Image (cartoon, rainbow, N blue to C red; front, top):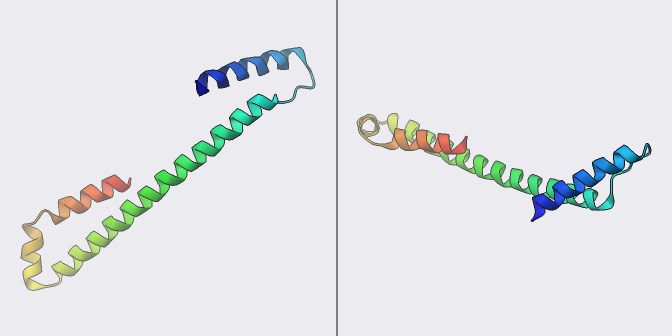
Length: 95
């Protein structure tokens, strides 16, 4: 429903532009463009927050592995665990 109305408003605006030399954005189109922009900004911010959260988790996991490696038994445990795979997966999620 929304995208169709935006397309119709754009077509109407194009026709008006062709007819007028001192063209201005129709109020309806202006409202749709503003709403679309606001929704896109919110979506971007949510995606950015999620990516930052995944990155922080991955960094934390990597730091834990680094600490485990510093102990004698930790090196053996890290080498035979799936911790590295989990961190790799979390880094990919953050991307």
